[in-house]
Each structure stands twice: as C-alpha cells, then as structure tokens.
Length: 299
Image (cartoon, rainbow, N blue to C red; front, side):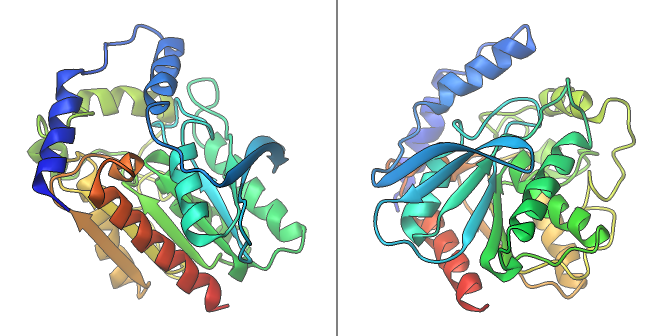
C-alpha cells in the first residue's frame, strides 16, 4: 500500500503517547480502552464459553464455516489484555478464513506469573484434543505475548507427549524474555509503543524472579525446536521485538521446521490490528488467512 499510510499511523501514535500508569489496574484499563479503537469486521458472532477450565470467547463467521479451529491467545505482555482486546485480530482471521476461533482468557501476572499462562494454554489445547478434535484441524495463533504462547504451548505439548497442531500464526511474537535481541537497542525511539525499560518492567512481573533463559520463556535463543509444526511469523521493522521473530526463525530453520518469516517495513508492533486503515495490515491478514487455509487443507 502507501508509504503515507505508514507515516500517518506512526505520527498519530506519537502524537498521543500513552500516559504512564501507576497501577496494574490502570495498565489494564488503559490497554482495553486503546484497543476499542481497532475496527472489528462485521459478519461475526461472539459468545462466551470455557476451555481448559478458563473463560474464553467463541468467534464464528455468519457465513458458511470451514472446518477446523483457530485457538487464539491475546497479547498484553502477560500482564494485561483479554479475548475482547484481541477481538479485531481474531475476528479478521475468522472472516478471512471462515474457520471458527476460540480466544482464551488465560491467567495474567503478577497475580499468576510464569508458567501459569502456558499451563492454561496447554490445558485449552488438551481439552480440544480430548473432545475429539483432530490436531491437524487446529491452528494456534496469537499476537505479541500471545504469539509467544502459540509457540511455547507447542513446546509444552511436545513435552507432554501430545501431537502437534497443524500450524502456528504469530503476530509480532515475544520469544525472548532475556531481551537480548539487537532490535531492543537499534529500534529504541523508533518503536512508538515500547521502550526496553518498559518491557523489562512488565517482563519482571511475569518472571517473578525466575531465570529467563528457559525454553518456555526464550525459545528464540535456547531450547530444542525440532518437531514444531509449520509456522508463519509476522513482524514490523519499527518494533523492539523484531529480533525475537528473526532469531527464532533462524533457529526454526536450523531445526528443519517449516517457517515463513514475513517482515513488513515501516510498521509498528502488531500492525495487523490496524486492518481497515493500514493497507499493510489487511495484506498481512490475507497472507495469514492463506497460511491457515493451506495448513488445514493439508490434513
């Protein structure tokens, strides 16, 4: 699409930087208010449900559905966010693929630090399997922290002896809790959302003193990725977390995992949320939908 769209979005984000919150409650309410500005496509039905012992949101297309399930994990640095804050992303995937989704309301830090979120995501995936859902009919997807959870849930599932899903879609995934990627410094000031200090602060709430150099916290730099399902990683060049995706893709390739690294120039963290106003967002979601369709047709 146009460079002007990207520049206009970046300018708008910098004109109204988020106020520095003083409490976890303010962080959560501020993020929820910000995400209400994201356009949600029509033609979807949402309904509260449960999965793996946690609340969840079922999102379905009004038109004829295709078979399969998208298990979606929202972003929010493991501290804030919910299925409702990610509804624009989830609904866009559902509308573009015709595949129904379940978006999980996993436990958040600091009340429930690592590994609570992964335990909840694994329990949700396991319940889908126990219901008789073919793992080859499931795609795990998520944004930011949720993109990381799509990966680490597969690692946890592998450790538990569970079969792999058909694929992973990760938007701007967080895959390195050590925060050692070069983009943590090179994109400081370029990223309109994050600073390294801010990421370190929310990261500490999730870690609760645990060593970040663990497979389920930093798969971009440690751990065995062999046997993971095919994956699509999307990121923008204007984000601190860019190297989380690029280094993880390198490790996945070295482990003989099918991986598509999709990097878009001049766009911010989870730029896909700006569908309808940023052409690159719509194009990226179309590519993600194509990947989901290909993975589910291959079963």
